Image (cartoon, rainbow, N blue to C red; front, side):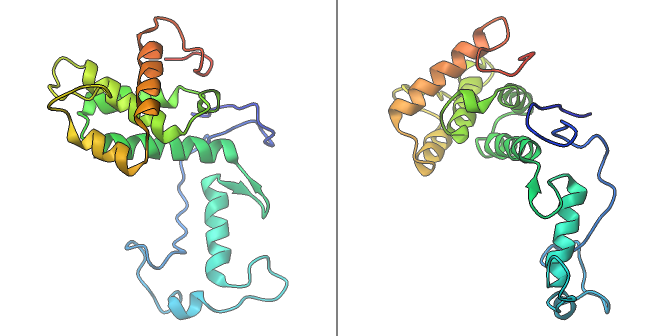
Length: 198
């Protein structure tokens, strides 16, 4: 499935429309890549011919892998829309797992977060992701953790530790939490959401 974008890309496609089937094992620090006689630390640090874009073999194959992934097209153009989509997906998946959301809560958080145009929020996307997870846990009757930013007494400590580590002020946490709450409770598509909303 492809996602179209208004950004100036060659085709207007933000995500690749095919599965990645080519594996280019350029990174020898990756556990999947075992050094062989043809590809090892010594070979990867060798220099290519002077007229090549990248002088070292490892950089050359990393470049090819990024083109194959759809992250870039040539030496200068980066598919920023796809890169943002990819990093937002990773952010909400990692944060919701670290905040110990249940599988159905993770799905709900991911669906809402990825439907938002985060540029229109005007704040850090990490804060929006945190507030999304916090609201979903707090509003779930089956989950007894209390994760509202203004809750007193016993609360879900993992939320406050994460907020402290990410340096979110109490004012920002409360404000963003209520923006998320308003958007998730609204019956129609979000004002800040993309076309179609959730």
